Picture 1 (cartoon, rainbow, N blue to C red):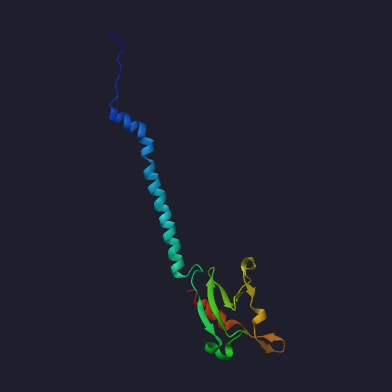
Picture 2: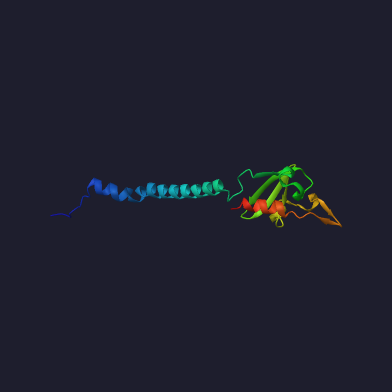
Length: 135
C-alpha cells in the first residue's frame, strides 16, 4: 500500500485559514466602543461646564452697583480650566484670579476703576461671582 494522504475537511480548513481575519471585527468593535466611551466623557464634561464650552454668565454695573470694579458697563464671566475666572468685555477677555496660561487673556488691571490715592478697585466681587460658576 502507498502513502496515506490525509484530507482535511473544507470547513475545518476554512476556519483555520480565516481564524485570524475573523478576529478583526471583534477588534474593530472593541476600538469603536472605546472611542464611543471617550466621546461620551467629553460630552459629559462639556455639558456640566467643566470644560469651557458654555457661554458664561452676564454681569453688569446695574447688578453690582458701587461694588462694580471695572470701567466697562457689563461683561461675561466664565470659569475656565477648573478655576480660572475670566471676564470678557468689548471683545477682550481678562483674567481675574491668576496670570493667564500662555498669555491667552489680558490682565484686568488696566480696566479696574481708580479708587483714589493711586489704587484700583478690588475685582473681588467679580471674582467671587465667577467662582460660583465653577461649582
